[in-house]
Length: 313
Ligand code: BDR
Ligand code: CA
Image (cartoon, rainbow, N blue to C red; front, top):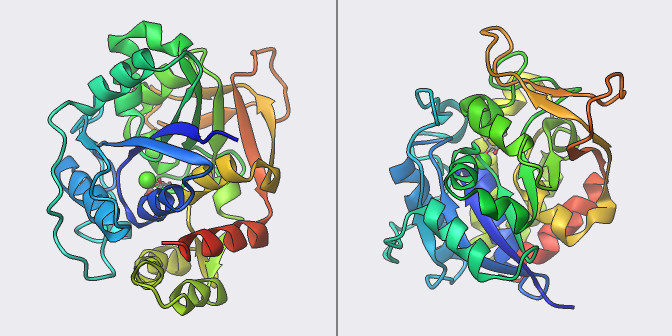
């Protein structure tokens, strides 16, 4: 089996960091071509810093990391320090990165990579607001026909929202970008809150990361400890979702997930429901399906996979 070529587009973020680690731990299935950063959980200077910290933690200072868009297409940036801490990667104490940031813009890297590789051979994995992806699609419309698929973390239907009562953070931050992506005609798979909220990092699951007793295992446990406190308090649950690794886990083990091909539209105008992913789960409209919207996950299988892979680095 040849490894699937992917680009991770991300705003680390502790859960983004675990997703990057999962990809780096899986080289026989995943060929990570580069990491493109976007403003989201924290501003761009911190997401580019954090992505490089994680590459160095994983022993991969050779991984190309690119800076992308520093703000949404048409709106002021909304960040989430209240969840991720002021650096976006609060929890472990990790050294400042020394590996360089690439000089090319993330959007140009995405476009050039898609044009240089055979059509339908590169998968895009957005883990943050969709600003870089939408900008690439606008700047180079020809790439839409070259993307193998987009597998993204974002949106919600049954869980509705986390940053507002009706919107999930990644979609809310740049709803116009999300609208462009969902209307692009590219094959899309969505890992929404409906999935991630079914895979909580309980104390036992986090202890399993810590018990690996490796620098990476301990850092993952410390990041998760920090990141969890917000959702545990908010939902009153004994664990919190670890959203973004679900994207990489889906590539590695799609049999752990289940969902439906449905239509998804993005609300871009209503002040009350801005950024809502209007998902036609019950197929009550005649709008054409434009995404595979996942709803269920085998949580034990997911955490087994994660723990075993994290153990490899
Ligand atoms: C998403 O928002 C961010 O805070 C997380 O990194 C994740 O990508 C969850 O709504
Ligand atoms: Ca993220």
